[in-house]
Image 1 (cartoon, rainbow, N blue to C red):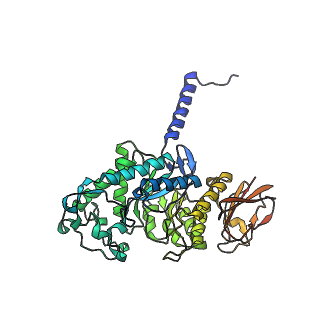
Image 2 (cartoon, rainbow, N blue to C red):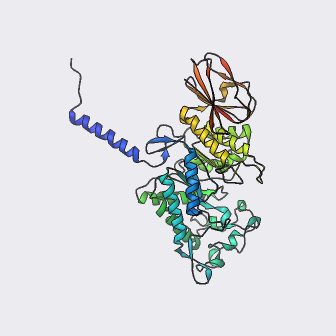
Image 3 (tube, rainbow, N blue to C red):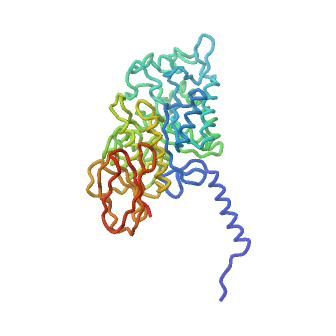
Amino acid sequence: MTSARLPIFAVSALLLGLIARLEAAEKAPLRPWTENAWYWEYHGRPVLLLGGSDDDNLFQWPEDDLVKQLDRLAAAGGNVIRNTMSDRKDKGFEIYPFRQVNGGKYDLDQWNDDYWNRFERMLRETSRRKIFVQIEVWDRFDYADNGGNERWQIHPYNPKNNVNYTYEESGFAKRYPEHPGANKQPFFFTTPKQRNNRVVLKYQEAFVGKLLEHSLKYDHVLYCMDNETKAEPAWGQYWAEFIKVHAAEVGKTVMVTEMWDAWDLKSEEHRRTFDHPELYDFVDVSQNNQNKGQIHWDNFLFVRDYLSRKPRPMNTTKTYGADGNKFGHTDQDGIERFWRHLLAGAASMRFHRPDSGLGLNDKAVASIKAARKLESLIPLWSVEPADELLGDREANEAYLAAAPGKAYALYFPSGGEVTLDLTKAKGPFKLRWINIDTGQWGPEAKVEGGSKVGVSPPGKKNFAAAIIK
């Protein structure tokens, strides 16, 4: 009896098909990983996004400062920044996207080339270093006067500062003194399913279209519609669809999300993103970083469970926590939040800018280096949260991600001792400590399987442990 063989032309077709798929994957942009959609892939390979930066809108920075910041991030093993399209004049070198004409007013029909050249430079320099960029298109704080910032008073969209429309035509008021969380600014009500304010919307559309002229040339960009918004759902939906349509017109696929304001991830606000995977390709849960300790971990896992029927990458582009900030968060809070999210399964983590976060200071750099060391031993996409395997554990004492029997990643914020259930695991295992506060390797040891074993870090600072075969 002879075995059936495929004709030569059929084998050739299969091989050509396989080669074509491999070539397509190698050119694929940043997108959810086809093998594990909790994480990102880039050019067909899984990638964990880790970062920090000293500002939210690095594209506005002078070129030398931008390059130094990106080089410092890359040297630490970091590969993601946040980039709001914000033009707040907080440092003195920021500029607006529109051209000033005679008399100093802005013409919203003309571009300020310097603004867009800066944006293009940031995209080019990050692409060269394989540093990914999460763009936030709109930032509510740019259009308010709260806290004495007077940002609306000088903004080009304010009718007194442009030659294009009046207060009456635009529906804008002269002042917006309330916190933007009150959602009183008509700027965020212009879309067709809201107030259909065509006078303003056409300039907003032109701005986003111009942004896309630059960003769609690159494949390392994610799009978030807003910074911690309280806008109506129709606002973000409109811009998400607008961006996707424009991308499709040039043969591109892009990943979009919205960032809501609520600190509680169980809030109805967040479900506007969670419940719509057909529109929002990933979720940003940065506001969980307003929480501490066990609640911080548990809330993230609540979302992971909620999304489990349709997994998507979970990003945290703003990790709060730095000594002396007005919210009372500390450096230790920032480090803990970064590491809890790392082990809980976040796809992207970035330290927020000072003074609300560590930015890219020495502590942030050490954490990123330590995380890469852990990843070199245990790819984080190969393990899942597994605190149920820990015994004699107090709240916030230790956290675990594991592939039982194969690999265990532990995080201790400040010393302690727990038991790790290895009763069903065949040993021996190698244990390698990593000092998170220095970013350096720590001691090594051996661990036997077959029982519950005690694990305690070699100090009372931040330590991670990799327990592997």
